[in-house]
Length: 363
Image (cartoon, rainbow, N blue to C red):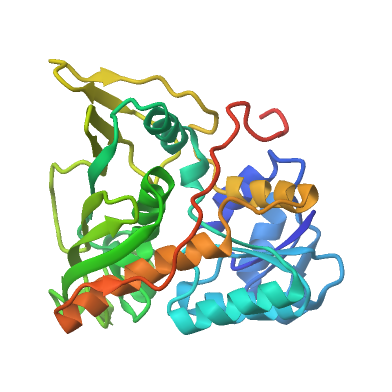
């Protein structure tokens, strides 16, 4: 299917490289508010058309819009693409509030169009191997989990770090999608959330180029800690932070009645995976059983195209994206209210990926 990319910033090159590996994906156009940036990407990846955003959304060749804009633009681009009759695959987070998410989902249903949303790391070798282990009973019944993402902040390295500290940003909406989506894939839908959050520093100094020395006003919590209760009764402890210089916490661990599973970083596609069964003195590294262990951003787009062609739901669909957004927003709401938040949303976790993978061109 023919894809038009809106947003040619920091994340776009990896999507465009991976797209070339899947015969399902034909990128025909790129657009960006900075036209020169779009032109540079088109030249780099031999893409036929460079358009304004409006031109791309209305172009008859474009069947799917790949939305790689900053989070605050996700909802407006998603709605405009759906109104134009295009399917949409968007970078995470899905959007930045529930109202806009519901509008996008309703419009997609009305138009009978597909919605897909990152992260597609959960379709990779690491998380899929962990899902296979849990389904095979390697750790017995899941009882609990931990998920930790602690870093000092994106102003140290990102060329445009401002939006990470705006409303709709912060560590939960930026990095939380990787961790919470992985937990839903492995443990199922979430039922309620409790959280505490804070803004540690009211301003941030940019240390990366080209904006070194500029100051960012922080408008969203930068350290969030809390807990999730899943529909199956499992309990997870979560910390997401842009206020930590160093730590030795694991990215994700799943605790079961018969053992513990150390899950790889959900911001990657591969391993390592470690398993320690009950009463065993040693951890054992588990070989990956699925493909896509390397950088494969764009895998979710390819899977969605196959779903469209096969007439089935895509794995990273709008209901999953909305459920994860609902939970992420609930952490700060719980902190503000002093009460846990029962989620109004739910979802059916994605089906496991085939161990043979999707069809792709040889690398």
